Length: 374
Image (cartoon, rainbow, N blue to C red; front, side, top):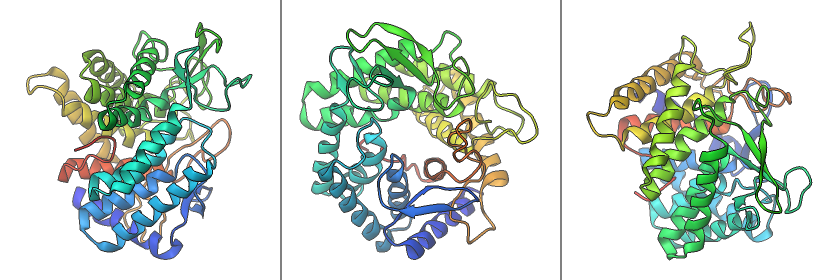
């Protein structure tokens, strides 16, 4: 089953390359992508899919397209185009860093280090956090962090390992500690976002941007927590991060519906038509596989997490994947982006496609994606 799913994903990625050239997929409606330039936070996932396909097949066409994408990401960074946010890791780890990991391309390595410097521009020394969105001093977002950043700070950990520059490591660790304290709740659920006083870092309160309400648990945010804290453990060896990742994973598993694929928010009323988020389950599967790789054979959580991954991935392949629809642009149906905002409430999500393929390749080939050196 995994092999068939991988072959389908490779074929669809190749077809998209042939149909749309060097364009990137953007969120649209009606089970299609809107193809265009790199100007959002999501384009790195598509390039990451192409690198995964190259690692799986060895076909030069995948490598050539991925390297051309890296050139486009270089142009974007040089132009400082649409980079006033914290999602720099999502953009440059599956693209530039992947070029270094897969091909030992020195230009890719340099570009990834430049991207780390771009992310460091989000560090706010007064409040001691990485600001998620908007310019410094922004009245709405100046003191905001969000759980997604746990998947962006691995770029800083990696940059520290490459350079020995303590600034990168310190910013990542301080932000991870602050996220663990304020974004993770006592019951192991997570806030999407948390606000601080920008002047001194005084905590103000938690909230949401894309979840059901301020106190709810947005499922993709919980998935970011699972994977993000597991990666912080990989880079630092701090057992508190691994414990946080495990606890977030147990919460995720305990709140899944019968088919093991999450709804868009764990607290949203489940009614006919309530959107799922297949992308959240794909991300969580990758995070749980990352955790399992760090657990001893006799760890009680090992069987729980590995079993959940098997059930979720089986459901995604059988019930959500576009296998059997050769002209489909996406790999997973029923992903959600911003349900309350009416943007992509039930459609293809390129990050869902990426993490679905990463999970499949983790399960079969031990290929873990591009979030750390191998």
